[in-house]
Length: 132
Image (cartoon, rainbow, N blue to C red; front, top):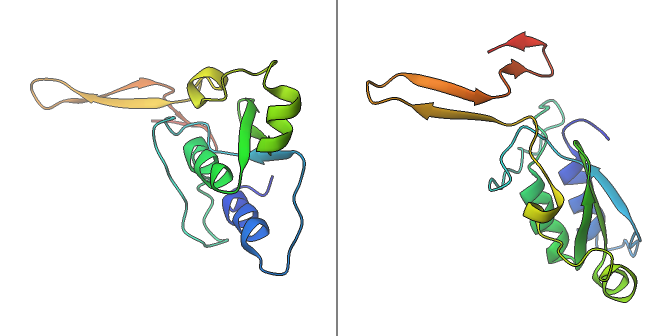
């Protein structure tokens, strides 16, 4: 949990040419306010604290042969595909985001016929404790 650059650290672990490290379990933070359908990868900048979307992590990990097996409000858990197939497939038959994650802090924006914009869901800037 490094508040924002988790995606890039994991990417570097996967793509480092000299690194042969293959974790058996990955627990990594994502931004729970982002919709599950959004693939958001933050800029590679340690000064920015955006976090990435769960979908971005699923895409990254599946590219490197890891399966999503569980989520909490803020974290996703991945294991190598081989470990999943051999030991977890019976317990976790559906590894889709839809089956394993429920967005509880999402905020949706919608518009009324007159052009008014409205918010639905979480109406607080969570990390700043301010209402929207």
